[in-house]
Image (cartoon, rainbow, N blue to C red; front, side, top):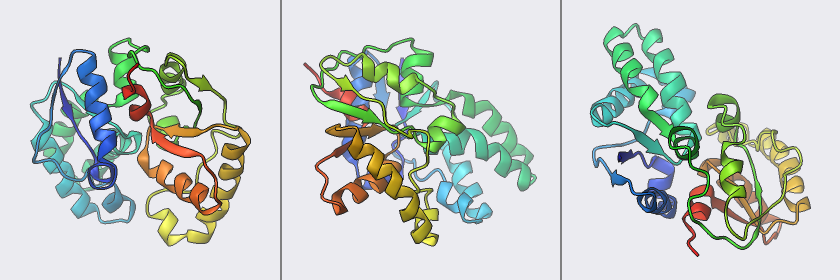
Length: 242
C-alpha cells in the first residue's frame, strides 16, 4: 500500500527520529511510504488560540497536499484529532462549504500510526524487539479524541523482550495542552507534578506515548527532577529490530 507520511511540525523540527522510525515500521511491513514535501502545519496551535482564518488557510493547504493520497498516516494523535475533529468545525464556523466538502472526503483517510497498524491493517506484532521496562501515557487526544483505547498497548505488549507496566492515573492529563502550558504555566506545572510522581513510581526505564508534545512536557519534568526515565515515541520502540 502507498502511505503518505504527515510528519507534523514538532517531529519535523525537533524529533526527526520519530518520523524516521515511523517510516521504518511501515516499510518493514511492506508499504511504500511517500513524503509530500509541500506539507506544513495542520494549524492546531492557530485554531486553539483563536486564529481561525490562519487555521483555515493551513487546513486548505493540507487538503491540497494530501487530497490524492489513499491513506495519510501521522505519528501524532493530537494532529490527527485536529484534522478529523476540528477541520469540519472550522469549515462550519467560517461557513466555507467548499472546505467542508473537501474535508469530509479526506479526513476518513487520515490516521494516527498505531490506529492504522491495528485498526486498518489488523497488525499488532510488527517484528520489533525492545528489552526494557516500559510504561505508557495515553495522551488526551488519543484517549478522548481518537478513542484509541488499548490500541497502542496491544502493539507494546507484542514487542519481544519488552516488560510493560501500567501507569497509575494513566488517564489524567499531563498538563501540556499546547499553548495552555505557556499561557497557564503554573497550572500546567501543577498538573504535571502528579504525572511525574506516577511515572517514577512504575520503576520503568522508558515512558512512551503516541504524541511527542506530551512526551516533551513529561520528559522536561523528569529531567528537572533528575530522573533517569527516558521518553520515546512509540514509533521508536516499534522500529527497534532484533
